[in-house]
Amino acid sequence: MATLQVSIVTPDGPVFNGEATMVSAVTKSGELGILPGHIPLVSPVDIDIVRIKDAEGKEHWIAVNGGFLETDGKEVNILAESSEADEDIELSRAERAKQSAEERLTHTQSNQEEMLRTQLALRRAINRINAASHR
Image 1 (cartoon, rainbow, N blue to C red):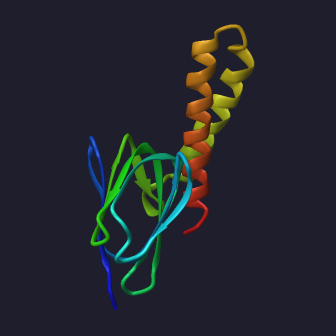
Image 2 (image 1 turned 135 degrees about the vertical axis):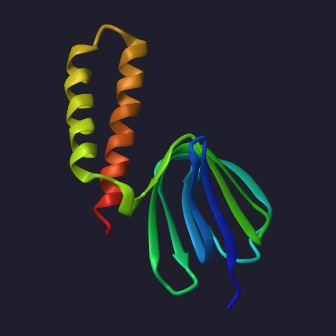
Image 3 (image 1 turned 90 degrees about the horizontal axis):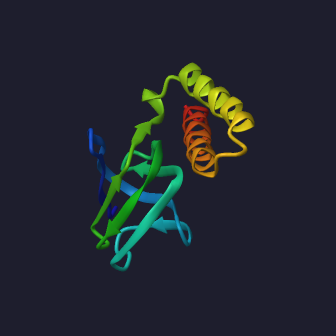
């Protein structure tokens, strides 16, 4: 069975490195499924879950918070701003971050820049909760 070498890396180091039969990621232009032999592509990645089906058939759910995806059909490399594998996410901490962001949103209505930062923090917290929910 043909596989892809998959690597997800953040400024803090690698989050995932292994072989996969399929990678699914949400890019700025929509959801993208990558199989071995995919055409070469570079695309910005949105705040969402990257699903990886490894060579043994196990699915890995990785919360990715923006970055870039690059593939040549043999490798998939994701350079992420930040990222966490589902098994590394502390669900209670992610839920507290979500609650904190929701509370800050109610108090930052007048400051547009702060509101945008808080909305991004809320999206990242929800993304982590969604990834952790698929264990």
